[in-house]
Length: 293
Image 1 (cartoon, rainbow, N blue to C red):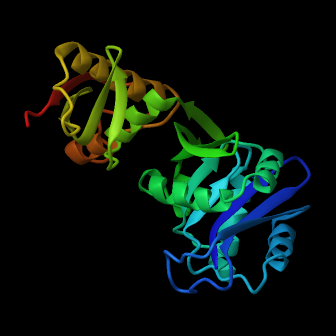
Image 2: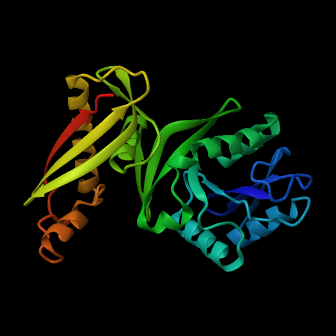
């Protein structure tokens, strides 16, 4: 039972990895207890690599529970599209699989798999824990944020960083920038940022906009984490600046992070919108408010 598929490539070859559960596991149990294993195969094409790695499994590969797709940092958009076509045509995987990046080379992954007992189990557990922050494979053509996992000294963890991928465009985000993007996109879950040199945990955030011509008022109404102190004015002001800078930075790279153009079209009508991605970023004022408990 295949639980995750790994994709990587270099100039001449493609590597496919299958994270699978041994045949003695309960075939239809998403939380089956049998130990996880991982097999890798490197070939000249995606189809050959996929066929080769399937032959290494103890029985015919079943992709019904293939809930995750992991890629290396150098995996191209062309390879992703080719894999998506295979999924749609033959069912070897799932178009709705949750997607992430494993920030380690294939060579290092092979080495760690040989040295670290139980690594495949830990990999699946980490994927499950971070699944709420992962986009789905079928979204890759529209551009999406891929969270990153790290593997160092046989230890797996969520890096907190991410990469925005659209076509061959790549924007790498550190942990602070990633948390800001997650807030602005309304992603569920708890987000922690360092504001005024102190950690601030946000467990819920509502984002709203008011459009006035070519200017935008962006408002974030946040709820702090349980038992966390109420953030001060300086921390709110810093978060507001971070949000403004993030929206402006993406706009300059041709990405409307918070869909201001669509909102403008809805408010003023298609063809009469006052905000378009072809123009300079609109004047943006951001206000952050933490709700009292």
